[in-house]
Image 1 (cartoon, one colour):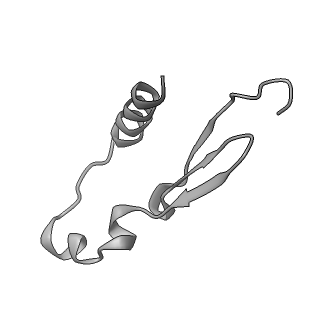
Image 2 (image 1 turned 180 degrees about the vertical axis):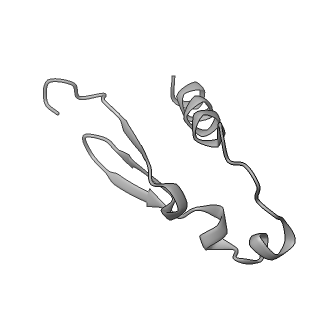
Length: 64
């Protein structure tokens, strides 16, 4: 990463959450359903198409 010191890599890990890797840190974050399993009791998740794209877009805007 010395060639690209400001490089950030966002990994989407599905039901396991996401991770960000930079030249200095590796941070993993669990998915919302792992943090609060009651979400699955309260809501019926039918379609997640586009969820990863929305997450990636929001991340890119925040860190641009």
